[in-house]
Image 1 (cartoon, rainbow, N blue to C red):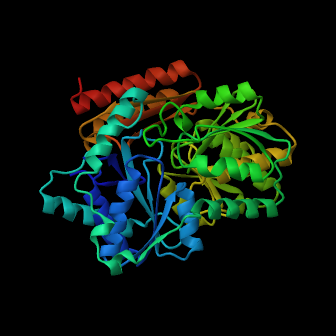
Image 2: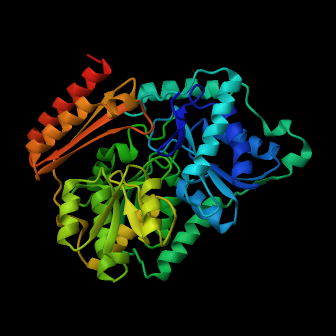
Image 3: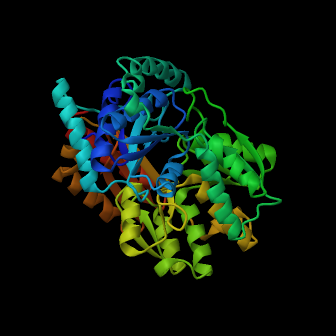
Length: 482
């Protein structure tokens, strides 16, 4: 049976891969493994409310106390868990995935993602539930690339499935219900914390025109208001939501929408969030895309100039572009590379005493401000770097030249078998010899989907495409896809 917990909590199609009974069981486990006082929040998905209620029901039935923080970004949960001295925090979200999916991720009392040991306890709770219910296991389905119409239709169907046999708080006795607290100012607490901190550091966005795509997600409640309070002129789109439009045709997985907004409004800079606002990508005034690698490098260079970059080091993942590796070396910055996942990045940061780390997807962690990827904080740190430099984002972006990158996904039936196959390893080694020191190859299984990823970077896109396609054919052959 495949593992329930992937690179960022439990995630799946609501009603089949992620059920209300699973959420309730995880709520019980939260009390047993983290402690009695648990904060629960969600993004804007239609299924979020039912899943949150089921999880809260589990917390209360296990003798715990729940704080319902409503709709807020994932980084707000991490911040509030620390600020309110809760024993743990829970975010109901599937991040950048379409609306028919949802997920559950946990924070410990320090606002950190769970350790491997704690995560294994939650995994065991789901295994016990599955065995008791006689289920056959858990499988992930394709999450990206659906058309908006299909996503909305599927979201409606899965929302209906989610309401069947709902564990309800009202079914609990009065003593249990009395341990539920509604936190109706959660978004304001998060906003004010960021405004106070960045204002104290001198950030003033007066005269700056910012474009925002909030992806019909949680960022619509927090990012525009925060930037306005810091003095920016903000043009924000996709701040509304109906539960079935989150990430559909917009947000960080569709930067063309933001690009159009930047060019239309004459913005100095644009930012695009994912559904739970723990990531952000940017577009400069000329419409050029600025990914997480470049955002992190620009911010790290700003910190280095101020003498604040701990050990002159930034943490990245193996997915970072080869161009970043070269640019960082040229600028006297050391790179620590980890496996994919912001939890891996955070662990390396904590172990080494580093203050900045992130992924190309826009998950960037600034440990001086938060303990998890925070799209709003990242956007403000980039704005701060731009303002302090006196240069435009377009100019600052010249510090790094990206190597052409080809990333191909292959749907497979057994990710582990493909990953460990010696024939594939031999094919990769032969391809790397062909590239020499002018490129690199990365083969890895997705942590949340039944996909095997083939990434190739080379001095030319044609070379990268040729090598990637050759390796994909090997993967298909090994998995029996041909």
